[in-house]
Image (tube, rainbow over all chains, first blue to last red; front, side, top):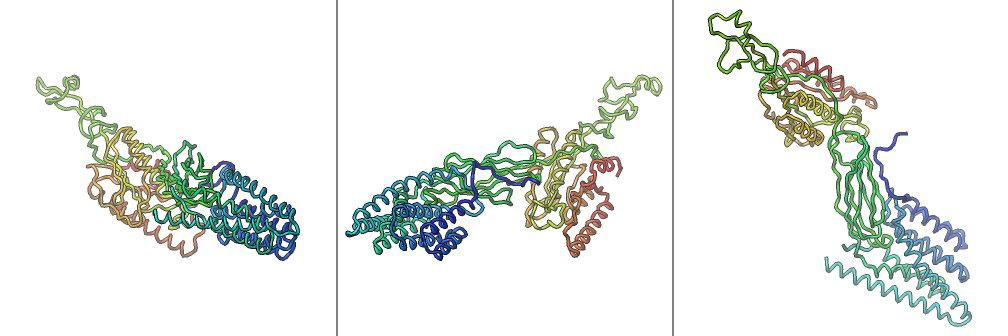
Length: 177
Length: 414
């Protein structure tokens, strides 16, 4: 077979399809593991396929929603909670990557190193907090769910703070421009 | 350099809030915990900000084996990742995500045609924080190359009817030095004493004191003008004409023209002649008549840089050429302008050779109307050749053993 006329040589890399394939696999496995209802499992798979084809639709977050539904339908469990934290974070990072990795692109593996390091760091903190929260709730079973209220309130407060900060930075940038 | 946020950040913040609210509503700490990593990720992203994603791509040519163009693409960036968009040979777009620090990519393109080439055009965009921070695309950086045509050795070239130069390798008709015997002539002021033929003087002198000298022909150089018509670039695959697809066109007429120009220039300079080059397009390159190896290097560089003229570029009026030149017009002769120019030069007394650079045609994949149209334009071209021949312009087909055809033309007397 004749060699192609134009080639490009990079460091070891993977195809764009691999990133989107991993996204589909993560959503599907998460849905099958964390959602007991078959219908929602297949909805998650379909949304994963849409997310892989059209990342800008954020359909992957629909897949995450199916997992949340599965969590709500099941009893709280530390192992499931830790798995859900891992899956939702993976879905978010992979969706963010697929938004900037166009079709046909090669992704040099070394370029994903900062992402992998950050993923590990965030997981280490989030999993520790998850264990702490879940153990706190289990220890206070039968009493008021203070950990839920405190944790939820903290997340909302942080999120509102982040939104305000983001808006301020955005307006600062526009003013500078 | 300041970048901008990807929509992923807003979605992450919204997702964290929604998960926290659902967890609160249903008293489920595990659901709240699901939003933790996304919330943390958002905190880290906002703490990082949108600065530091500037990227400057650069390209450099690398030595490569014959038939290939090797270009190294590198980026200078403080972003985590860089998205490269590389257009190879103006026909294939490739994308790659590479690390921001010290990333290099090698682009390799097979040389399909001689002449000016654009093997790589690259633009880049810096990405940070998993792609949550994006920079604006950089300027497009281009790597321009000139591919020299293959060197073709040609033997004898046609000469002008009158050789006017004072030094060279062609024997002229004027008396001078270096050539063969011309005649015996009465000594005149200016003749060298060593030229006196004593035997002829003893035999043929009519009066005492008369001296006869042996005269020889002078050696002269010829003035060769190469005129390239760059208005068309037609490949051997007729089905590709007008499509702009030079990947499947096969050898094109301009490939032949460049090869012919280089071969003719080399043969003329080797013979000690002076060569001028004119591109027959408005604003086309012209090199004045000259000789020697440095002039040949200039000619070869100019020939390698000669590409197809734009569709809207007008044909150039007849360029000035040295008196008594042999003019080699390189064209496909589909348009009448090149033939008109050749006829005007011929009418001015120059020796003109029309070199048809149209490659051997591959008529496959042509429909019947296309075949008829092709036959029509080829018939019109034959009429043009007939006119040229009738006016005393020799026609040589470059695709069919040009060396012997040129030798034949050189031996013929016009």
